[in-house]
Image 1 (cartoon, one colour):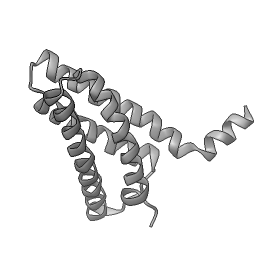
Image 2 (spheres, rainbow, N blue to C red):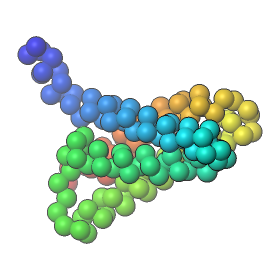
Image 3 (cartoon, rainbow, N blue to C red):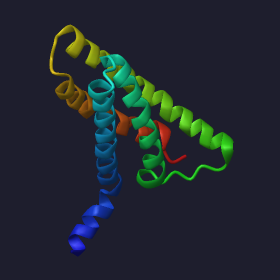
Length: 137
């Protein structure tokens, strides 16, 4: 048990990021599924709404649990939030391009492509969060 605890402490941030990244992905896919299949929205609109919902979820969980960011005051928190949103816009735009090209142009299954796109997005988002957004200054 002590070995597991040490391993967790050593890799805590990555493990928590994977857990919350996985949950964020589930939120994103579930929101996409509801929008696309239940609300009958087109691919890009459904994907855009799913992105907004998942970015809000990701910011809160990353700030509080993964990177344990301790911003002081409104301005510092607003800057952190803005950098988070801008980085997520970059990966969100990449996700939109992947979905448009693979689903709308190439005709691949939308949910499968959404899952594959999210794997790439998770990796890039961790790098941006670690290096840019929540970097200890």
